[in-house]
Each structure stands twice: as structure tokens, then as C-alpha cells.
Amino acid sequence: MATDARVADGGPGPALHSTTFRLSYADTDPAGILYYGAWFPWMERMQSEWFWLNDLRQDELKARHGFWTVTAHTACDYLEAVGLFDEIRIELRLGAVGRRSFEMLHRMVRTGDDKVVARARIRIVAVSPGIDSVEIPPLLRRHLDAWAQGARLTPTNSDQPTEATA
Image 1: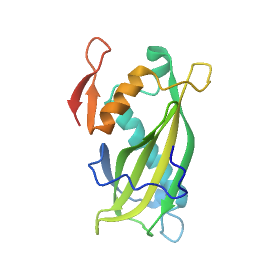
Image 2: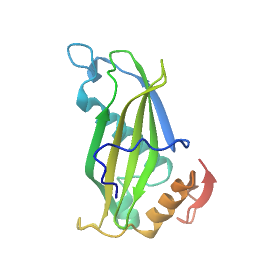
Image 3: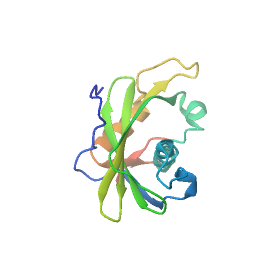
Image 4: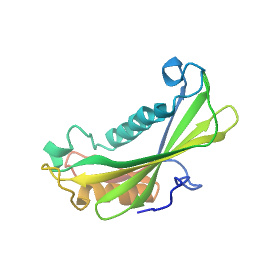
């Protein structure tokens, strides 16, 4: 796993997934500047949607596949101030992959000037139904391997995903 105190930028390649939204009052402090904790719900939405799009619904992993994932660590670097009504694009990339955990990298870009305003790393751990850390299960490992190549797996009727382009 990466040990750098700063969050990796995610590299020059294409994002696995992205979404664009406009900051609202709920995202800002009384001065109209982004509240520091506001990025985390947006990152979770992005990550949950990506897993859902890949037939890895967090609410079904344990029952369908005998494992689930939990967030073990988060880090976020705030690089530029953003404020009320700024349009933001969040990009999701795969970071380091280990035996029991992997990282999802998030890059927040202000679309008005294409500036990276923040970047974050979320370390996710595979766990058993009893919440013990386990090696990344083969199903999830296949997805991670595909994502590392810029592809994604699509579900079939047989629970055996097949490769598709992202």
C-alpha cells in the first residue's frame, strides 16, 4: 500500500467513472466556501455507484458472495478553494491493490478552469461475514484486475462476469 502522506493523483489515464455536479448551500460553510467534510459523501456516492454498475452492490455482497468491504482509511488533500455554485467533476480511479485491501482514488476538478481542487484516497478492506480481514476474494480480484486495465466486468446470468470496455 502507498505510504506517501499526500494522496496520489490517480495518474494520467482515463477515469473508471466520473460524475459532475454543482456545489450547493449544503456543501458550503457560512462564508460560501466548501465545508471540508463535504467531499466525503460525494466520494462515497461515486464509489457506491461504481460498485453498483459492476454488479457489486454493497448491500448484497455478504449474502450473494460471502464477503463485504469496509473503509479502513481515508485521506484528502485540499488544493484549491471552491465555493457555492462551482461545478465539480469527481473522477474515480483504482489505486494500490494489496492482498487484503485496495485503494480508490478520487480527483475533484472544478470544470470552469479544469483545475484539480482536491484529491483523496480511500482504502477498502475485504472482510468476512464475521468482520475479519480476509484476502481479496477471487470475484473482487477479477474486477480489480480488469479495472487496473481500464476495463470492467459485466454480469451475466451465471454470476461469472465477462469482460467489457469501461
